[in-house]
Length: 639
Ligand code: PLP
Image (cartoon, rainbow, N blue to C red; front, side):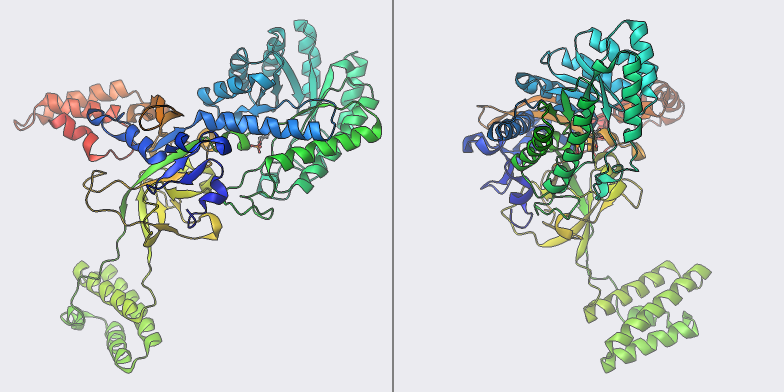
């Protein structure tokens, strides 16, 4: 646990148990020891074949813990409740969840359900997001806010007005000045009185990666001049009472409460000016940005960490709003936040399996006689390098040995390209040079490449896109000392499909040797790793690179069963047919075409057309990832 900093990034939800497995504490700090869930056992249950009591799901696998979502929401709410109470603040907090962070139906429905007791709402940034938020909030608190952000057209605004008509507490937040004309026009046509908010472009700038859209030159929001024009136009249309909410967002992962208080203070000034100008202001919506600690360092200087707790975050927000409002003598507004990352990151874990690891076996060659038999075929320069190398070795001039070895290799590659050396000879040269560097002890690279049954592009897109780091650790064997270091390489053909940067500034990960005997892929014992804290953004962004689709998903709750958990939902990942359909193929037609071909050509007496067609059908119906030996479609079809 120490080696992988689990206590730093994992608390209070993840720890390591006495079996050496990652243990999940679904109720956070209030989890009792008998309520802990062994993640390795969950993965076994999900992936073991049906005939041995498992659910037969293929990896990679997302394991969701709705109880963690509940704990995150309740912790956020109580942090604000406490700050409000202890600072004598005269209004309440009611948050919204920005669905862009994870639009999964069950995640959104859980948040609405768990948050309905404290009016928790949703934020949408596009028309489909608004549709899903509208239908989900039908089951939420009637006071829950439905905040409509993002660039808007007539259709988006008409839909938001319809939501208001349906008694959903909808606020249209102006992201651009031009949206106001549409809101005024469409609301008059539909006969709906809108509630309007506006997004202010703050001068406060968050300088980290996630703040690149903040500040005066930021991408979104209205400048001071634009805000004044909006107020005037609303006044002219006798709609200034519709303006009720001020929103801003200075970026995700706000590193410190000092920056946060600066931004909130600036926004509170704008809020109080809007009050002075006659708007019926009620809510200050501070956007997202509540950060989480991916590396456990608690450092404000890192994009992947933050230096504050939930309580400190809430205290800074409440304090900054109160200070400005009290100075100006205005009523304290309702505080809304749009935290996404901080709510959904912890509840889901991506589990994947190592399918093989590169080895560093001793080179299989006879040296130097291995080269001697074709020494005469070497070019004069290469032969000179070879002889100089041997002589330097005798004299103990190791630097020179390496120099000659490098030259020899390059010249031999040239000879191979010209056709004057064959492949076995080139392999002898490679082996010889490797032996030389190993003997000298300089290039015995101890870092291995572990091949993972995963697509980095699909499942960890932020790592590929901008190097976002996540805690990645084996989920079992943690009572065993890892004896090698490795980088993780995925199944895609792309050279970017690898993970070679880890939390703590490491360029490799301590790993265990793959066990040669066992029941995993092929004959090996399975070796599972987990990516933690990836519940926000990663699932929403992933694509279908190399046509590897998304993972299987299970939802797990604590229960009184012997293992202490119950899988309440299990969904296999997309099949080959599903991902082909995304690219406009029609799997049914493809199957028919190939089946005709089977009937035409493949009936060679050995295998029947029927068995081959069954195998083909399985190929369409299985996931694109590597199947474990037990569930391989061809074996099944051939049987
Ligand atoms: N609100 C808005 C307007 C956003 O753009 C974002 C995302 O960056 C969020 C909320 C969610 O932010 P976070 O995940 O940092 O809480």
